[in-house]
Length: 552
Image 1 (cartoon, helix red, strand yellow):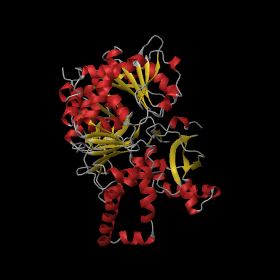
Image 2 (cartoon, rainbow, N blue to C red; image 1 turned 45 degrees about the horizontal axis):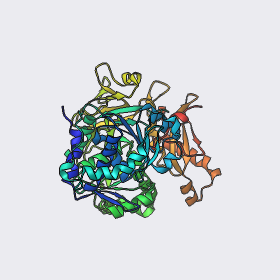
Image 3 (cartoon, rainbow, N blue to C red; image 1 turned 45 degrees about the vertical axis):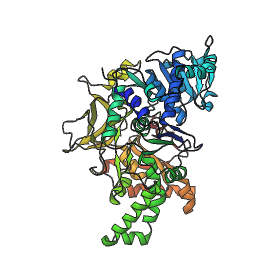
Image 4 (cartoon, rainbow, N blue to C red; image 1 turned 180 degrees about the horizontal axis):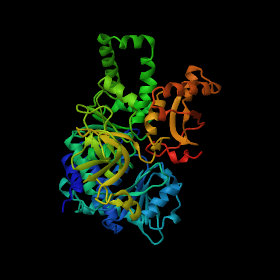
């Protein structure tokens, strides 16, 4: 049976042997592909000595670093199953996932270990720091720390001439077997273990190569959480498989930090989420466009083209100036921002996916991209809209194909609910598809609101308009007491800059409400905008946890 997933990395290490593979942006420490191979070999020896078996689970939690990535690669190439856990999860959730997955080993950042209780993780035989791979805990009766002391000697005996290219031989494992157990961080208040096979991940890696989103010697700045499927597949696994050089940001990606790193790394391709580009648009570009002189210039066709070209060139330079394409995924992009990027001919594309597909479902390159769509279904996947008129009447997006997960780990009920009787996976997203196969997403089925006369209201579309208005940082639209309202968290920085005081907000928001309602259908109009005093709580993917706020 095929085992192409592990072969990707067995081939990459020798093929790109002398090339740089991974760099820590802060410490500047680097690994070549050869050095990555050496670290993998050491961890394989440890796994052997501990009698870790194929398909045993190894949990991994911590910030994106080369050591995090090496641990991931060592686990999957050994034939074990990696359980990447988002570092933003609460310690209780981390321990729950470690226990639920039955993980035998746990690799983590030093600061993570301080918050965990080893006696509550009864399956774990050893805990290791991903700072330096030392053993920080061994279960009673284990001799892990003694094994670690002997590891250099064992390595020298196994590889007396050092690791050579021909020594890189990894596990033989069927691609239909489990490779990654990825726990989702949804907005509904609980996580499920998504079972991704080697075949699921091969579907994503093959696609990355076919579309030139990766390549030998590409420079990649990784700042998306690698424990999330999007970042893991395209910012990490695909890059290593095709010989790129990854620089791990290893800092909180504030716009200031991120843009400085972009300037230094000059990435060849960029994988990001809408939040980054939307912040830059709202804070850096929109104020300039709103100046009277700029509005006059952009209304003159012969001049507007030059102005937009200058803005595009400046924006490209902001992101390092050398990328072929920016891929925006992980969440819907604000339509106003998207329209602006199209107007200035910025090289971007939008993809659609979910953890359950490891993640990719649809995509289209920037040259053939259709505005406001999320591209067309990718090779190896099929898509249908559960609607009597899929082109005009929104219905649930359903998919099947090589990227679709095996199911949820130890959760047959949730798995059964997710698949239709004829084998299609329900995405929970609502959309339409045009004659050319382009997908247009309207919103989540769980967030859709039924209007007073049965109309479908998609709160995400209203929120996108709200969030572009002055002094609004973020919003949630919901039904309360049979009336449509919006909760709004104010943009305090913009208020300070413009001298707007808190006592003035009610008047400002009422003006916004009336202005917005003129752009909406009658059944979508807001009856009130309510000020929310604190930032909304979010998942690590930066989606608002709506369920916390939808109670009256």
